[in-house]
Image 1 (cartoon, one colour):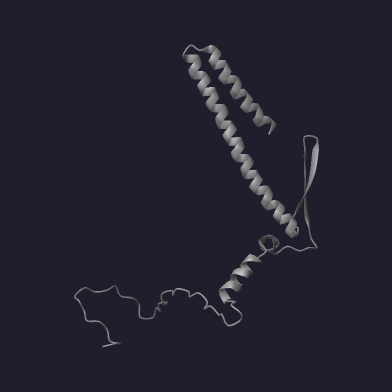
Image 2: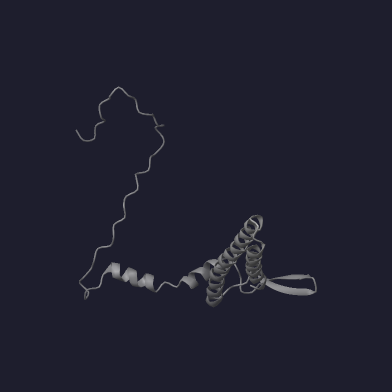
Length: 158
């Protein structure tokens, strides 16, 4: 009958303290029902439209600026080797600056991948030159070394 405990099967279940309350298992979330009464619009469509209008840079700026005051800005001075630089810290960023930071981060990653590929190419060309030299082909080895040097020089100028 409903509400009664199941019959014992001979195996005992682990006992829990009587005072601990167990949380119910999480329930799956239901999607909002479609409301087609207002000219075919729906709650789901409105949610998609709100997501399309979401200001990612504005949200990132809000997180970046959390706890910072527009009135106080930190400044760090770095000097050495005949140069000096001021760096502003703990200042409030606007949306444009956050977008620029994101773009610079993407470009830095791309540049790092390119530099790593060129470095690997230069190392491979040197290894090929070494193999050719040990095989008694000094002219071919020199060509590989010069190609590798060209790839390495490109790294210095990047």
